[in-house]
Length: 215
Image (cartoon, rainbow, N blue to C red; front, side, top):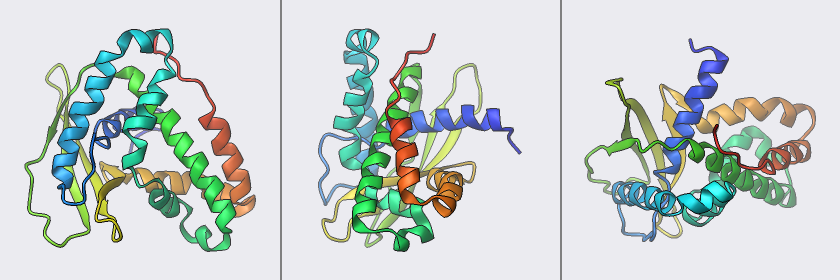
């Protein structure tokens, strides 16, 4: 079992990887999630490479990249609903709207921070498969490591919107650990004891933290 400090380091690597895979220039209903993932990798890293000087002067510019290139193509509300779990039904629409906004800002800040550790890793996406009439797809991705280390194996969860037909990413699983389930477990205590408004305030505080470059 991984120690907590090891898990934090591992989670940061996973979070960095997911940002490279959830962004694309155009999301069309007929586009395969496999195609979107390949486009995602190309788009995100091109944006980072082309804006290095701006990022060095203002690391928070990474939030702009995440906001523009990532968030429109992630099912934030769906992922947030899964995080709330059984607590979802006990909240009001207004409370959920504020929570989803805070959750979106939290994702923006968290991924922008992790992107400061970009070191030009190579990403290999599994060959495309027939999607057919499926509305949930899991796609394996290997993050190639330097120094001959074994690749990190990830499974990304994609969901087809029943109304729009668009594919969007909502979760990532690495070594059997789901990001959605991780946050659900981490936040269940405050939800149970203090409610969604207290959790929203806590998330808003975390989301407001500035992005800082690694030294």
